[in-house]
Amino acid sequence: MIKKSFILLIIGSILFIVYSYKGLIVINLISVINGVTNHIEDNRPINWTKHSSINKDQTKPNIIFILADDLGFNDISIHNKNNKDAPATPNIDALAKSGVIFTNGYAASATCSPSRASIMTGRYSTRFGFDYTPYPKTASRILNLISDESEDDLPTINSENVDWEQVGLFVGGMPSEEVTIAEMLQDNGYYTALVGKWHLGGLNEGMRPSDQGFEDSLMMTSGLYLPKNHPDVINAKADHLIEDMIWASSLHAVNFNNSEQFQPNGYLTDYLTEEAVKVIKNNKDRPFFLYLSHWAPHNPLQALSKDYQKHSHMNDHTKQVYSGMITALDRSIGEVVKALKENGIAENTIIIFTSDNGGAGYIGLDDLNKPFRGWKMTFFEGGMHVPFLMKWPNEIDIGQKYEERVHHVDIFHTILGAANIEAPSKIEYDGVNLLPYIKGENKDIPHDALFWKDASYQAIINKDWKLIRSELPNKQYLYNLKLDPFEKNNLIDKELVIKNKLNKMLNEHVSNQKKPLYNESIYVPVLIDKPSTEKYKDGDEYTYWIN
Image 1 (cartoon, rainbow, N blue to C red):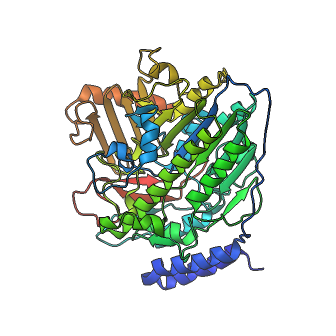
Image 2 (cartoon, rainbow, N blue to C red):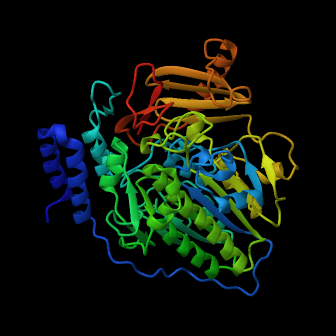
Image 3 (cartoon, rainbow, N blue to C red):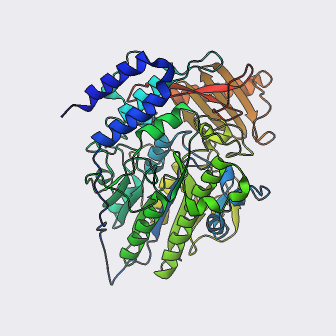
């Protein structure tokens, strides 16, 4: 059998010869190679572990953590009541109204994997060198091959001397020695299950869900919601190198407990939901932790035809597809809540819902993160100010709004607090248990300062002041979020005392973080004030996502 690396070498040579048509060739050829070299078996039934106990511990709540992917602040209707051209999310809204809305909820990172690592550990992922998002080596090669270097666009910068064996999902991942929330709960009598996206090292021993505390895991192994030509799916693709990479490298595939890849039985969002409901039914008589990690509404944009048609009034194909994906995500929340009620465990189940980062500018829609500025891959509010909701009928009063800043690192401690479990004393944590704050038992603010960091791009929020700084380009921004929550007035040249104070705090924080475990391979330009599918014009603000 011809090795995949040899095939890719041949394709790479062809691509450079026919450079002017490289985007189209990469998409078509890599898609073919991907399908040929990645065997996917037919769908199979999932044999979830089933627990029953007459003497169930009623003091411990069931815990469901639901994570959306690239869900913008403006994507749920409770945040966009005045936007008639946005998809309705009645089930997510009902979840919010039956518990607490954190109006200032922050992602741990502006990209997915570092956020997920921080959620799982209660620590800034940079404390253990996990700065970057791992992805397949072929995807990194694709990004480099099809990067647009036309004169009127910002160039994608290819990393020199890349060691491809040190780049990608097959090597990168969260260090196995990190203690996860799943491990803590499993050690204290909980059944633990992952349904959906993991993205913390899926194929390496020590980094898989089964190695990190999950008794069962139905893991998404690639990114198609349905096969591209499926009769029930409507697709939308934007003209952007990340879009090219995703469409070229994605398959319709999952695995269960480290099995071979097989096809999901239907549209991915609905399929994951159906399996999550089975987890709830199977374990209603024992405390359980369900991590429902949706891919939606991450690209590739694919909606079921029935959901697409619900938004025909929009008269915008891409927005209609995206809205259909939000509808499926909202349907999932409704099915989970329904299953809890039907099994008589809704009152003593805590549900936490958030997104790993803000909406992405490269899919070509301009209002995902409104009213905030910026996108996924930026440290402006649009990249990390995300939906953040929690419900626990037995313990949390309904209809609350909590306005102090909270963060993904708080989820770990909040879950442990709900389960009355102590965190290990020898580990340095960054989060807090939010329950005493929303119950009024702790009148302080949860965080005096919050930090974000990657290779050459950092941010800090201290009280109401926010500093963003980058090396590529070399620029700093300073905002008073109380007076200017939408980051329109850069005060970096006016508030010098505040600037110096925040830079000093940020320097100290960065100096205490671990050096990144893996080398970067790509530098992708991101326009801050308009979708990255639009052309760069002189004067446009931009930054670079380094990964």
